[in-house]
Image 1: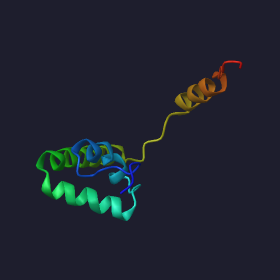
Image 2 (image 1 turned 90 degrees about the horizontal axis):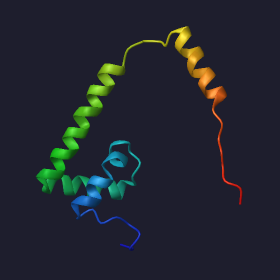
Image 3 (image 1 turned 135 degrees about the vertical axis):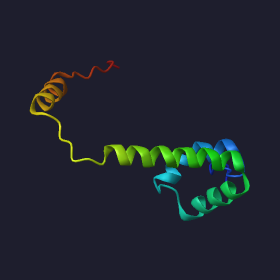
Length: 90
């Protein structure tokens, strides 16, 4: 393992990569290391399960066919149109 690769034996590295793990953004080898760690580490498994439950709740609550009102869409569009990006001159 090179120094740039995360050490999935360390809880802080596992917790730092939980979002990527949930989103299937890790390589299969990295995901396997996370799975192994979660099976051996109850606190990390608890964190994983909390995140998993939260994601399920958000999916359940946001899985409606709700559509923003025309008035809200116009307000958002106007805000986006007015947004100005300021960058520093070199």
